[in-house]
Amino acid sequence: MTAPLKTAKPLTLGNHTVNPPVVLAPMAGITNVAFRRLCREQGGGVYVCEMITTRALVERIPKTLKMISFAEDEGFRSLQLYGVDPQVTAAAVRMVGEDGLADHVDLNFGCPVPKVTRRGGGSALPWRRRLFSRIVSQAVEAARPFGIPLTIKMRKGIDDDHLTYVEAGLAAQEAGVAAVALHARTAEQRYSGTADWDAIATLKQALDVPVLGNGDIWEGSDALRMVDHTGVDGVVVGRGCLGRPWLFADLEAAFTQGASYRPVLPALGEVAKIMSRHAELLVDALGDEKHGCADFRKHVAWYLKGFPVGGDLRRRLAMISSLAELDDLLAMLDPATPFPAEALGQPRGRVNAPGKVSLPYGWLDSRDDDTVPEGAETDESGG
Image 1: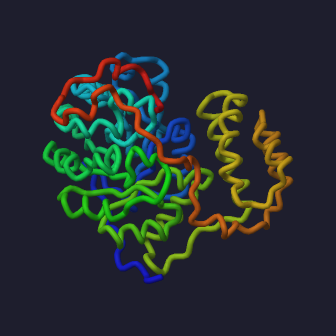
Image 2: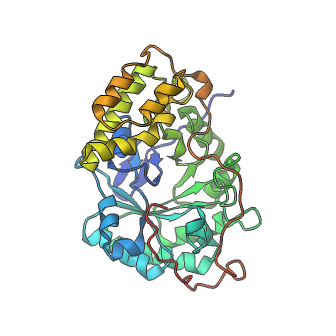
């Protein structure tokens, strides 16, 4: 493999410098305050809270407000909002500024799940270009008095016949966004297939504002290859860090050392320590050992992927109800077991087949209809 020729420079968002230029993508049920702290302990970057619905935020739904939780040492608090109504989105951004809820706001135009797209939200919304432009423009204006940089994250489009990413990127740039992130898949692809890094390169060439690339970054070397291939200004990481928070140490090493870096490959003993730390942070964040341990269970399979751990022990770890039980089971692992090389570069988390995108009736009929879809602003926090 030819050594990468480029490394990305530090990224600037408002008055904040992001170095290395790495962003943790918001993931429902994953990127809570505990997981973000765990990742921050590994390396630098921007760590985004779980996605928040604008309507639920404006109406101050207690469950939604509880999701907006940041540690005292999170120096750059990043929040992603999902909305389809320009006025409600602007009101939510204004509330973020007035209440001092976050230092950075990202707007979600990339979610492909049916409960979001069937209401015209997420990755379906840029197709309605006038509605998209109104949402972004009004959100930028709402953020400006508070000095909050506003960014967007999107996909290539609904499917290969309905691509929107270049036009949407240009519209967002004109509206005044600080950066644009592209997950280089269509909504139809969901999380299947291979990310189209050529599309990221095309977007980078079309825009003057920073462009961030998302898709198929499983190792630090992938980030360097993406930068080299696309000229992108930074990377966004989602599924690649599931069960691998040390990926951020790997990314920091890659961006610091360039082609000479060596990947971070913890042995099973180190992984066990991180698992214990993760569970402790969840218990602390949720304020209850039972609920914290229950929330941790879904992470077990990701942490142990590729390691030669027996099925019975895996099942017991995935059913823990206390920190003491977790530590007792982790002590049964062989700490010297090396990280499985065969797991490198492999997809993690959701890997599904392409599927028809659920859309509101008549959604594709007109690109200039800026009517807010009926029922679009119901509470779907965490979608």
